[in-house]
Length: 130
Image 1 (tube, helix red, strand yellow):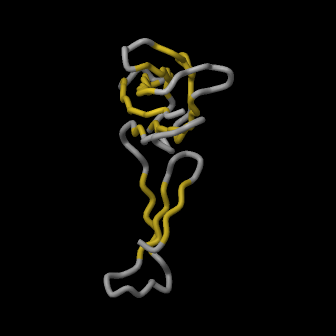
Image 2 (cartoon, rainbow, N blue to C red):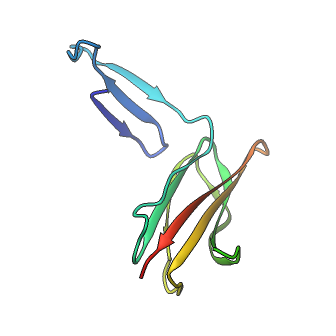
């Protein structure tokens, strides 16, 4: 892989060279479309002030994003069954004036296909150090 780029819909375009390391004079372009829901790790982790995570949805979906503390209590809801287009979406924690203490937190993204098809739910772990 010589280079890789992503458009707003979450479609990756990859420039590929041949095994000998020579770049083709007319490079092959490969476009990949995600067929499943992807939740990416937050960055930075651990964090001091804010962290950001993203997910990719393969189709339009109703999205709910919750943050839980180590005891399973919801401390913030970043999205409540909001219709979001296919592609990559970013969220930041903590958002605005939400006050949270140091510790382990979990982010959970739930998605239900806008056409009534599939549902997904995935979680990640993050550490806040103040």
